Length: 303
Figure 1 (cartoon, rainbow, N blue to C red):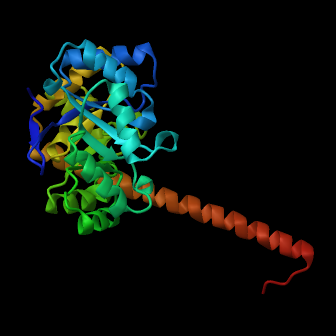
Figure 2 (spheres, one colour; figure 1 turned 90 degrees about the horizontal axis):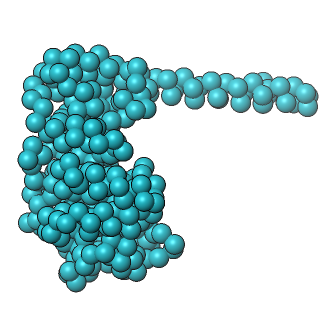
Figure 3 (cartoon, rainbow, N blue to C red; figure 1 turned 180 degrees about the vertical axis):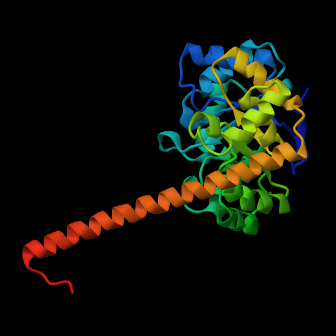
C-alpha cells in the first residue's frame, strides 16, 4: 500500500491516511460513501460522536466483509447529549457495532471536564479495560498538551489538528512538542488551500508540481501533508477522488517541491495576518468614529 503504517507510542500502528466522516451528514448515502472509501483502499475510518454518523460508518464497515482487525476505527468523545467519557464510549461501540475502537480522542480541550488530568484519567481507564486500543486528543494546543503530559500515566498516542499549507507554520510547535513525547499528529482539512482559500500563493507551485507529475492538485497537497509525517485525514463523496487520494501516497514529491509549498504557505499566512490586522483596524476606526459622533451629539468633550 502506498500509505504506510505509522507506529504509535503504545506499540500499535495506525494507517497514515484516513477517510473522515465530518462533512458527510447521515443517512443511507453516508453509509454508501464510507463503503466506497473502503472499497478503494481506505483502511482507516475517522468519525466522531459530534458528526452523528457513527452508526452509518459502522454499518458500512460491517458490510465491507473485512475482518475487524483489517479496518482501523477512530472516533471521538464529543460530549454528545451531555454524556461523559465513560457513557459516550458505550454509545459509540453500540453505534459502530464493534467491541472496541482503535483510537478514541477527546475532541476538544474544552470537553476535558472538570479538567484535563481528570478527563484523561478516565481515558486511561477505558484503555486499561480494553474498550479502546489507543487514546489521544484533538485540537489540543501546546499549553493543553503540557498539562496533559505532566499528569498522564499513559501519554496520548495522537493529537488530531487542522493542518494545511497556510497554517503549517502556526501548527508546527504543536507537532514538535508532540514529537518529544511520541505523540503522532494527525492533520485534517489538508485541502483547504483548494477548497476555501484558492487564489493564494500556494496555487502557483501547486499547478507547476501537478503539471510536472501529471497529478491532481489535491493529490499534491495530500502528498505534501504526508511528507510532514502526520496521519492525513481527508474526505470526498466522489469515488474517482477517493481513488486519487489513495494514489497520492505514491506521488514522488521532491524536497524542492515541499519547500516551494512551504514557502508559498508561509507567504499566504503572512498576507492573511496583514488582512486580518487591517480589518481589525477598520473596525476600531469605525467604532471610534461612532463614539466621537455620539459624544459630539451629547456635548461631551473627549480632548
